[in-house]
Length: 236
Image (tube, rainbow, N blue to C red; front, side, top):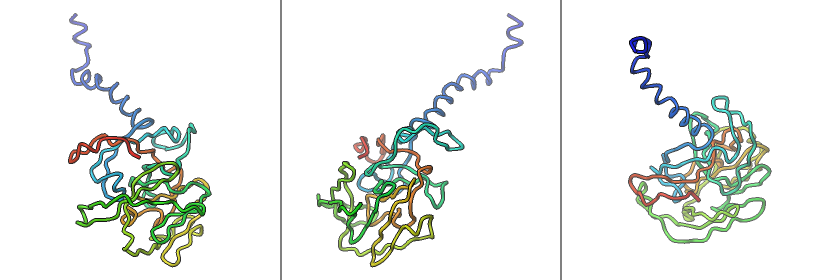
């Protein structure tokens, strides 16, 4: 018994060791399965609000090795209508969240507040008004169906808006900016993203395409909003 006490590890080592399995499990969950994020802005209103805490499915589009971020198992690809978290192409240290509106090979056009994909107009049906607290104003609320996914977007059809690139992004030659509109052909291995708050979102219309290796995963659940707990539910 005296020998056991003499060779016993310090209490703090045993204490830390007891947490090691938990740390390993959390690391594996965050690296390969699910990761929590907090919505920092209103660019995805009304789908996601500032302060929403969401969960992101990291394995739906394939399993990547952490740190080197290399995909080792192919499981699927983002589809039109998916809400995805990705690393901002201009600064990969920043995470963005937007909706996929164009996949590789698609021709995406946004003109006069109307989205067109491969020559087909994406219909948006007026469903009411939405009050934006940050702007103290009302804006039109519309229901849009993209890739079989029905979701709501915000549009101010009276507000004129021109789209100009903020930088000479990769594959800039695939886009045409003219007459207040933008028209892009999505290159292989890239995606075209837009925010649901169409008039207040900095997205692919301005900074170009998102490479596949920048995609973190698909947002699928709002698990908490401390200011509005009733918002808990699926992300559509």
